[in-house]
View 1 (spheres, rainbow over the protein chains, first blue to last red):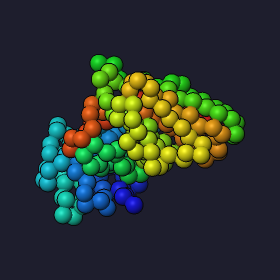
View 2: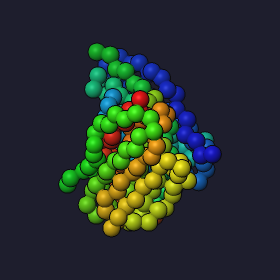
View 3: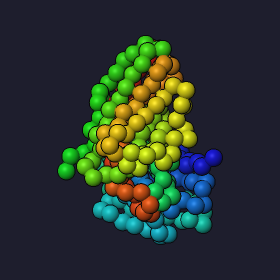
View 4: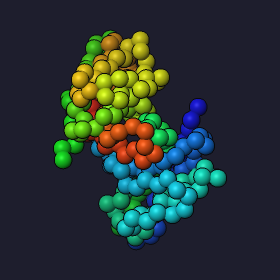
Length: 110
Length: 116
């Protein structure tokens, strides 16, 4: 059974702080790793993807991947109230469907 | 570029009734996915199509769920008969092609199904 684990939260941070979201996965054959953001009542939207060990930065977002530890994380710098949402971690092998975690709810207070 | 379209957006039915959902993927996207998202959980794959062929339907409850993708474009997902536990959001997603390590999937707005 291929699994993706996330802390469901809620994770609460003040505006301007760094939010750190974590994810572990069970399938060592996983090749690509995604972070989706999902606002309440909306569909998931892609924030970032990563497939090499290390860090990948895009604006205020940084994805980190450690394949040896089977660990993926997402850092959100200068958190804004508009970042309040559920963040879904997803993994896939080449050409297969995404396997999602249950998501972590982030709440950014102003 | 138009996104993934789904209809209806909302549906309320009684248990044992039938329901169908429709999805139109992004133009040119060969791969189409149906996911089920129960409240408080992440999306779970029901079925994956490559053009009009089924790639993965291992998690589709085939005694009540069926799906087709005629002509490799639009797709319909049917539930017959519905059970209370089928209450969920049904998400359709599409991606450009299968077989690459980077496989960005674009999601439609979803259909929220309530079974009473």
